[in-house]
Length: 341
Image (cartoon, rainbow, N blue to C red; front, side):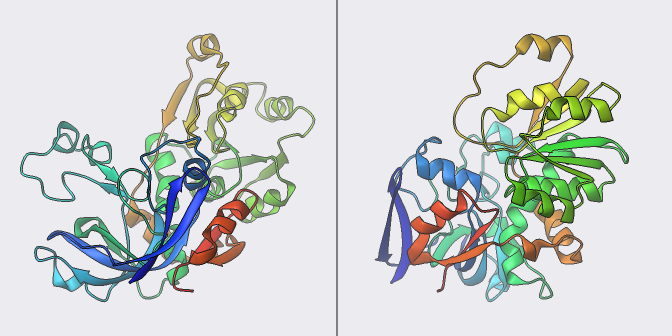
């Protein structure tokens, strides 16, 4: 038997002992070690991001492969891994893949399930199953805890894969929380001049540690004016919206330069009201969404130790206290679940 934390309805987590999941021929069974709490987990838990329930949340994780299916490579057994979260036609080698998979867009597979989010149980359980094709081995010199940051780091990298930046360019990051802080680090490493805005004073020091050249409170007297003063009145060519709130997009529109890009990272599950679409059209602003990113690049970056990833974890909870962990995560930069505690 294995423990799992099941979201049965918004705001209700039930801890149960059930048999470990049965795996298919192309799947692997992973004994989960650590799993991170992210903004998407919180949105689903609150009900603002509706998904089919019941579901086991959690998609930022690391663990050990303990079993593989008949058509999965035995070489995975015993390896420390994480896994991509989109379970697609390509993940299962479907003979006739959907149009998205056939077009090289597997993250947008028309038939996909999404680990810990849509119709696939996630990492807030002792054992989870994933497609073996989605696995990525974590190098032996990488702290296993850092493995729980691979998925969000990949998402941070994807921001600038789709909205490229140039060295010396000003990048504003709205929200220096769970994901925003990683976006700040990636932008800094790519040579940007980074300005971080946060509603929480305690986030500002961490933003500077991850490379922000300026870190301002969002309530700073007229941060829009301050930004325009330091950009010659033009605004920032790239604004990353990572507040986790639909209202962040409206703020981003006040900060972005004409013909600039708003890189949208928030997934609050609720629509943004009152957008100035005239400004978007007249100023020729590009809005670029992005989500899942390149795991290999994220692992390579984490392995360098360039960014102070260890400083991000503010508290660690056992699996049995997941409801309390989700509550704490609303006010903390990063909460980690130690699944085997």
